[in-house]
Amino acid sequence: MSVSTCPVPPDQRPLNEFQALQESWFFGWSKAENSKFWRLILIFWALPWLITGPVAASSFPWDDYPLVWSLTAAAGANIGVSLIVLRLYLGWGYVGKRLWRETVIYEETGWYDCQAWSKPPEELAKDRLIVIYQVNPILKRLGRLLLGLVAITLIEIGLVVWLYP
Picture 1 (cartoon, helix red, strand yellow):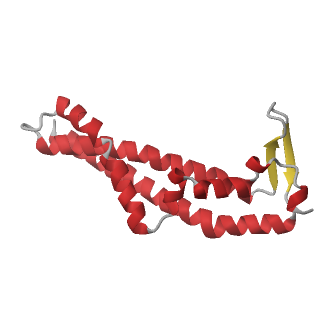
Picture 2 (picture 1 turned 90 degrees about the vertical axis):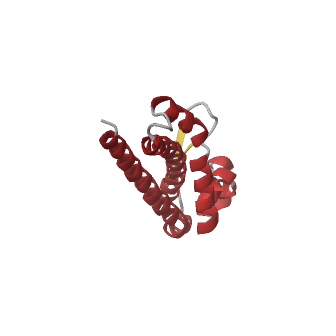
Picture 3 (picture 1 turned 45 degrees about the vertical axis):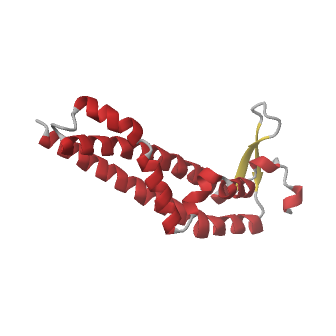
């Protein structure tokens, strides 16, 4: 069975979903080289400071508690960027699972008429190679970043609790 006889609508085919993620600005930068990736992470971390800085200042005035203010605002910014990284991780993970599976679940008419199509062995092998060599490295990078952000946020919160009795 060739790809041309595939009954799955083009926008629901795992390979097309993968290509759409790669071409998407939001999901595409997660596979960028390190300098661009970290620059964008820094931007996404700095933007929430516009909200978390004033919110932290309302609880911990800068003049009285500069360290506690900084830690609180940074923890809030970490939560903001963590949500972005989590969204990236979930999107890539979803497409990776669809590529890895032997069958493709799809909607034929959009009226919840769930259908399944078994991939031919050649297509399954190709999809799994894409997962191994392209999707998994992205998931690994995003997963490490997310764990690091959670750890740093917990440390910041712990320091705030310790410094501000």
